[in-house]
Length: 358
Ligand code: RIB
Image (tube, rainbow, N blue to C red; front, side, top):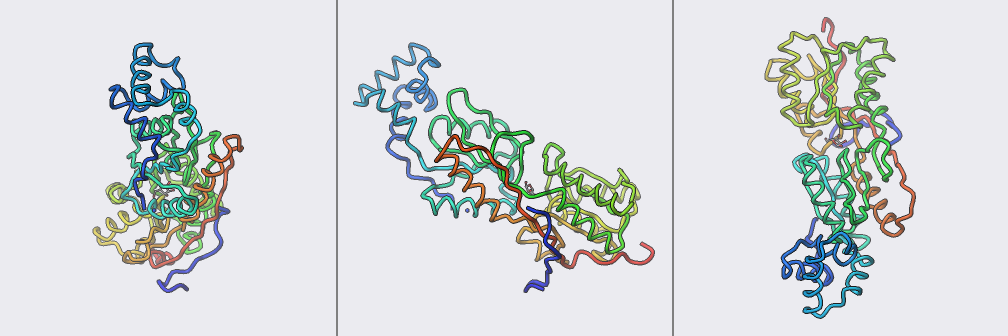
């Protein structure tokens, strides 16, 4: 039993300081040329490295500025191709979700240990914002991207895009990824509820566009099968990983008159929202309804009651992702690899045996 009263139930599935980096002279140079020539940095980079992609007039204008500033186009182009900014972009969908802050701390630790800086890009799942960061890498303003989303930005036509996926994965992608076995971890959560005697177990899923959410739903269904419980589709609601989505799901179940004695949520924020909605309807947690989350964010042990959840190895996910990125930058030919880390079930006060008659 640890200090906060939580117990790590069993070995589960087999599976920070952003400082704007001082920009090296080369990046300043490209920016200077772009400002004078009144084009984008990406256009200057293209004109020097892939002149065929830039109009003759624009190319001429850029070369005149380059010469006027006393640079030689070929040396600048060579420098652009080889030098590193030692700046990595960490893309995340939702900066308000504390899950990501512990992952980013792991990225930052390994980055700092190896002389890199980290630029945070919060995309709110916007394709446009993801692509803008990819263009930064193509324009050699950053060396690579660690994305915590289930989508990888398109490789700009005129550049490489060193990318590593953390916490999520893109099906059939050819990029290195580090995540946990979400099917098994979700299974551990639901198996545990079954051992407490629960059979009407509701499920609040994450966005179905994310492969890890599909995996968590599969883990939920396989656990019901193992317990010979037939899945009731009206006891599944889809959320967006937010606290409000957890509240809305419970409101929906209750409005439909659903009967359930436990609910498994695809992340802790939705579990916190679910507990809030249950309590606002006069239902006690866990006496009337047991609640299990997923992530083990630092607030999970401080909720009332403290949340039973799946502990993702957040720091290790970040450290491994940055390690993969450095390997990739040191050897672009390194084959992509998948790393699946283990996750534990952490039992706290939000779960209890099913009450008789529930
Ligand atoms: O809470 C945010 C969710 O998205 C986490 O479960 C993590 O897996 C991230 O991908």
